[in-house]
Length: 200
Image 1 (cartoon, rainbow, N blue to C red):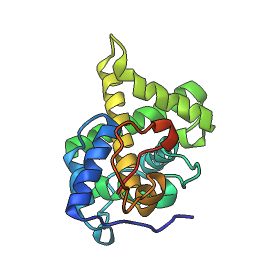
Image 2 (cartoon, rainbow, N blue to C red; image 1 turned 90 degrees about the horizontal axis):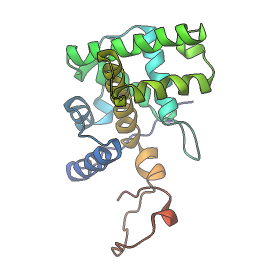
Image 3 (spheres, helix red, strand yellow; image 1 turned 60 degrees about the vertical axis):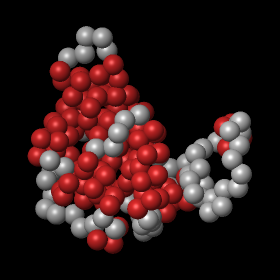
Image 4 (cartoon, rainbow, N blue to C red; image 1 turned 180 degrees about the horizontal axis):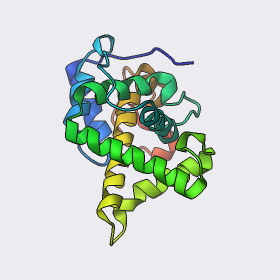
């Protein structure tokens, strides 16, 4: 069951959160995601779907593989699927959308080639294997244009998932352990005592 929990931070809090997410992702956030989170959650209305039911199902499954349920709910459980629908239908440029769809189609094709099934019908281990291959494709020394594209598409899926997740109440307050008054600064505090990032 989906948890309907969104946060609408102030512009300063939003800016800090976006900076933190850029560090987590290892890259600057794309304009599409930045613009999408500027819109209050209650006003985010997806337009006409610009992807097929199959492509949407693959993207949503990827979100849950990227951020599965642990002691906090999975990506889809907190509404990342709806965030993906909104960004793809409203904010992605046509060229960005085309890249994403080619990547999702490639993932489907690879699932059928390697395992003889649709991506969403595979076992979780097989799905993770394909996503790992997709992510690593661009790091090969002699990576082909297709491998580079698939690696870029994985980065897009990861960005949509992570940004969508951390702009929910669960992401901001449970996953990152919300502390309204974090106390004194300790630059030598051991990360292994924390176990995760903190937000304020």
